[in-house]
Amino acid sequence: MLRSLIRQLSCSPLPTSIQELWEKHHLPKSEPSRHELCGIFEHLVCLQEDVYLVLDALDEYPERKSPGRSILLGIIEQLLVACAGKLRVITTSRREPDIRHILQKIASYTVDADTALQDDVKKLVNCGLRQSAINRWGPDMIRLATQRLLHSEERHALLSTTAWHFLS
Image (cartoon, rainbow, N blue to C red; front, side, top):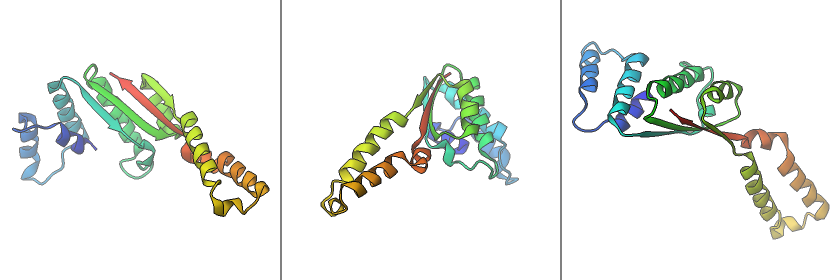
């Protein structure tokens, strides 16, 4: 993620800090450390007036696969502190306990998207169940299908989404 963000913030000609990092790691064919990449990112943010960063679906980043979601959340927190006043971040995620635990401590705003999603899903289900092929099921089956589609535990777990906004 850091490499991608650095590429997006870099302009031509490349800043000296990036050139020096490349020279340091090119010949020995080594990888820059997370600390070095964070430093470059922080430097690039300082060169900008404001940087807006959108990180969607944090819950899809593997929780246990190396380096792990806790590392990603720590980097987000570190960058917000280091780039205070210049970096604006918005993230979205399902309600995963580890994500909620970290981000609620540092978020400026939290938006629960469930209400808006529930209304949209209800409209979609009702529209779908008005199809002529489904009308043959009869009112009892349509009522049961509506209830199952709109009130199932699985649907709630899939659609529960939270957005966090950070103003550093």
